[in-house]
Image 1: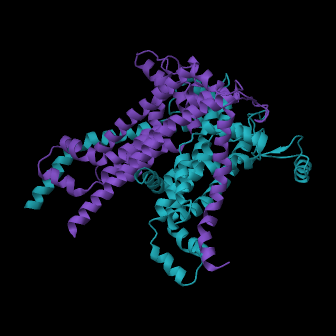
Image 2: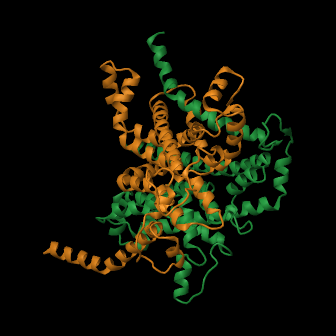
Length: 304
Length: 320
């Protein structure tokens, strides 16, 4: 083999292990799932033995009120957590954007909630929401306000609060990083022109942060659709179907109802939803890149 | 004079804003750390004290809950326990094996792939990097059904072949030898799940390695692999640290796929926690002690490597 052949093969050698693993354990399963979603398939069967069912699974789901309920709960959960987390996270970043000696210690403490296991997060919050021994009801009762049925009537709100506790720091830290990398000159200019704090935020800071904020928002939205363990531990989807998000319903359909075909079809619906969000994010990134490139060309053109 | 005035105004400004500012900081820290401290406090209480719920932070700490949780691997007899029902100790060993092995393998495979994608122009490069970006969004719940089916039914060694027979004779069992129920089965899916993220994050670190360094080494006669291991890897250590922490965190914390793929002997800690939480009588003290043990490794990482974690997080969004 000549030297140049070896050279040409090098990248493939570096890439091969990753490609093989992802092909076997991600792409093949995904194709297998699409294949399985067209079959009446239960866990005791190999997929080859399962009967072909056409679009039955998809149509069943389309008309299934429980699936609709679950879809609505998922959308409610995902959009409310992302909206509230963006609001609180960006707000806090704007408030706390100043050089402070202990800032790195604070950031360390803030990211603790998102590093610990979702199962543990669910465990902590289930305890705190406990009707009699939980800290919230004990506090409320000790000041004479009576108790709240956290994981009963208000279950969806309660799991949303837990998610906000866990993930707002993520947005806070990204927003803070974006704020601190803003061009100083723009902020100086605004200050010299006499812009008030609010005006600086609305006309300078937020518009300049927007690209990072939009990507953060989409990333968080995609992640919000993946949440499962926290809710599983806190409510197991209940009471009724009030907190049964899609991910939870998929796992219950597969393990409790033993309908792998239906669960596969449901997974496909969820995947399509996430695909749209991912494509939106990638497209947005591409547009930003093109914009930057054009600005650069303009500036370079000026210079010459 | 001017400087003095300047200092005065700035001092005045600070004096006006400071108390509210610090109060806000204290509240935020309490809110984010408080629940974890509460879990720690409860893990050191007896169940009677938790349920009476009055003592707050004034109580006599005990490690009984930790002993109960780890009863199957503690070398000494435990007085307060007649029978060791919970097998959290074994689960911890499983969790450790699975998380460590999958982290190491993901890093090795991932940094090689990231290097190829950044430094070489070759056919299929765009396909690979595009696919990698897309599969990042796949949730574990979507993988549950196909992985369960494949690991149980397709990724098996036929018991009739000599290799299958050998494994069956060595380890026992009746049917075909399948990936489900083994450590390797769970490790494989964790590597695959983490690879897209690791590749993506390491790319942003490899780009920053100056090309001249690599070219100089190549001039001195180093091959591609030598350049990679001797020049590039040492320079992207912070990136590797960030990637390692994120991978370990997911492998250590994950519940859903592990619960679908494990059998009696390969259960990880999150599975046991969920199983115990769905029982009617929750033993709060023991479960909090287990939760605390599960939370300790990520907490330690966070305290010692928060800068790497934050770099990793920001690299993820800013360079997305």
